[in-house]
Length: 105
Image (cartoon, rainbow, N blue to C red):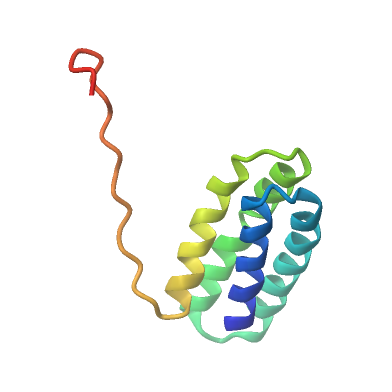
């Protein structure tokens, strides 16, 4: 699972650098490895995290193919799932407070 997380970090780095051609190759490799890992693990928590990751494959793949910077947003939940599966503490998401038009803040 640690190797898979390393692959994810390489994918994330490519997206952050707007290297969408490189990200495309890394994405295929990452998601294929995640699918293989699902078949190997007997740990329900890891399987759940990987299933959640694989559910985002189409969104990530399409975003990369279109060169959309918003694909970064699709990667964030994957990072959280993988960290949780590896046993790291993952703090809860803090909701963003809406800005009031009247207050201007």
